[in-house]
Image (tube, rainbow, N blue to C red):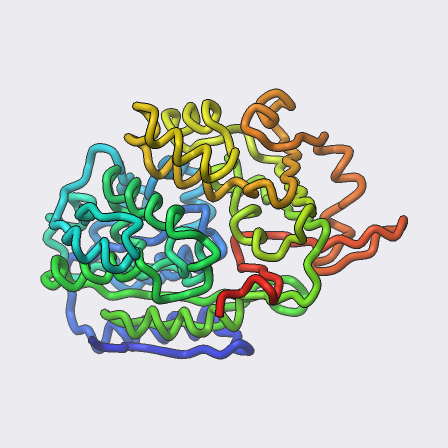
Length: 425
């Protein structure tokens, strides 16, 4: 394993010039490459700095950058306005859309006994390692996996080989990986680099991907005092060390531990970034360990117009709703459709408060009937925005004019919040 570049502290503020210099040094060490594939995230990770890094890769390699495939996972392909916004100057002709249902190949299976061991018996089937055919069969002499390490509800810490096996993976691998994470429990994993699912993905990479010329470009992003975002770290390497170092820094930068559990948390979902509850429920995942018992999560969601990114998953969310884990597990055991879409089942578990606190959605483009139909409370967006104006309230604790005390989060994708009593030892 080689580390090509590593820099970062909780106080670092790496400039674009710093990033460009880091890439130049990395590519000098790697030597000449003639056919390069870049795997950045999609627009849901706009703040990752993966967009500028991808355009810098293009500036360096030019025509030798043969393909750019956003790691969509189950998300819809990026429309032109997102591509232009995230990757300015990158020719659209280089962009390939990942089709998670059809355009993949199974490259191997993680044995059932290993899966059983690392999950504590929660899952005892072999796990299919799947990749997009372009990644596996494209004949590239350099594959750059680009993205941000940040606490994550499915695997503990986002990115590294999740960008491969989920971001460019197939239906079976994605469904089972999400369900493993949900069944094992978010609170047991979020903010941790070493989790059962990570061990499964590491096994797959170590056993099946040795011939792939993989290099990871991993950022850590954190807020400045004025609320703008800074690159706190950049770690580039071809093995797990670069991920572990990025994860260690991300915990310092992106994990907020509260001494007081908020009775009310208010989370804003930027309409450019969040247009579905599939994406917007980061507001639930990332705050659930912070909210007080019998408290309330208020989600300001002006751009949310649907539940699932995929029509089939959207239908399942509407059918089963965000009720609780026992109800979802019962449906998995007793129905025909949910077992075939385990990522949807996992999402329903992730999006439930398990009855411990209330979730009030204030959508811009969904009706009261639709919101209440999936077991959330509904509130009128304009009314709630007048009370909790994102241009007035500040990140963190706020005391409203009538004395109400709230905790406000302007973007849940950037971190993880927990009350001290709920942090696993």
